[in-house]
Image (cartoon, rainbow, N blue to C red):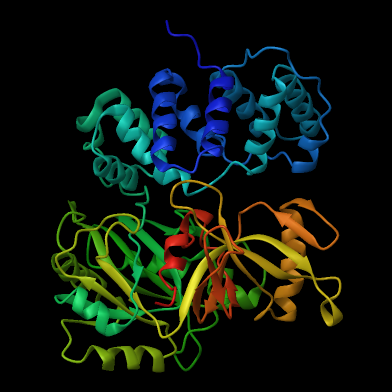
Amino acid sequence: MMAGMLLDTVVTASADLAATRSRKAKIAILAETLRAAPVSELASAVAFLTGAPTQGRIGTGWRTLVDLETPPADTPSLTLGEVDAALGAIAAAGGTGSVARRATALTELFGRATKDEQRFLVRLLTGELRQGALEGVMVDAIAAAAAVQADVVRRALMLSGSLAATASAAMSGGTDALTRFRIKLGRPVRPMLASPAESLAEAITELPSAIVEYKMDGARIQVHREGDEVHVYTRTLREITGQVGELVALVRAMPCESVVLDGETLALTDEGRPRPFQETMARFGSTRDEQVRALLLRPYFFDCLHLDGVDLLDAPLRERNEALRSVAGEHVIPGEIDPVDASALLDSALAAGHEGVMVKALDSVYAAGRRGRAWLKVKPVHTLDLVVLAAEWGHGRRTGYLSNLHLGARDPDGGPPIMVGKTFKGLTDELLTWQTERLQQIERERSDWVVHVRPELVVEIELDGAQTSTRYPGGAALRFARVVRYRPDKDPADADTIDAVRGLLRG
């Protein structure tokens, strides 16, 4: 029987990952570690290496962890299985005396950990190891470790929604096991994403046979129906079925027995124009605010991934669109196939208060993420989704508020976000108040003027472009950046990459 993998092996691998910028080297480090992991501990290895416990948040605060004064062990002895079991027990602790039980369990766990392992555990449990970009590198590492094609791993991940499950299938059964993943009603599929286009003319030239649709300023949703059972998920695959009863009723009334639809939803004014994005997102949370709960959401669907027992992921968009129109009726997003005048459609979208248009290749299959450029988004202004790294205390009327934001782009090779600029523009008094409170909740460290935070929050930034810069490590800096809004529907893994910023460089 294979012995458990030592936590020290993962800690060493994590340090090696942090020490290199080379994507090839990162893949090699991860693949070697995955090959060495016992099947029973593979899920823990994948989770820890991508920066999160298998349980997600375990209910232990940052202050509790940093205040632990437990002498470290001299030599490594903890296995991944033992760590995972201990974290599971801590996460499950509840009721009277749970705080004391968690503290005791943490003390016991940390008492068996070496100094380096203790540091790793603190960073793991506070989210400081979590780097969404590393997931893409992990996919390639799973492929390398199991000697399978990376595209097969990506497709399995899209359908399983779990890196651990995907890795287990790859390592135990190779390509055959990975290709057995199918759409399972009630299990969300990772969404396909769009890449930016400089202009509508560029998008039409690149995708000459395409559908052009409104790009709405709403929240991404995915709905699943099997019989009368309906589930609604957000862009990050969080279930919100209980908060959106009107969407559930609408999908339940569609002329089908089973369906999976991809789309947007938003709250509208009495005149039919989109309400602010924050008002739509407020409906997704648990709230007692009667005004928020009274806002009705209107869905606009743009893709059909499954209909009445038939999976459509591998069918071209042209066929998926026919299925969509047969089932969603008036709730299909406005758009035209190969429009005679695409600019008129863009003008009508903007006039209705929306962001722009999407141009989608009619022969494209549905593939999670931004693989290729089958979907292009066209907007009249440049915007980027960036990660908040820090904020500076304000001056004058902003004294006492965290104001000037430090912004980072995602490193596609799995490193930490790369700083590309700062901005204090576009922040309302309400947003300043929220931002000051929220950023201090995810604080890592501070100096006299700057509060550095864990890279958890994504903010949408409008800008005039980018310019070359020796000030920032990515060699590019934002021009005239301003805050549009925070994006609670997105994780750091959804942020734009440093390559997207460099793509805006003049000349």
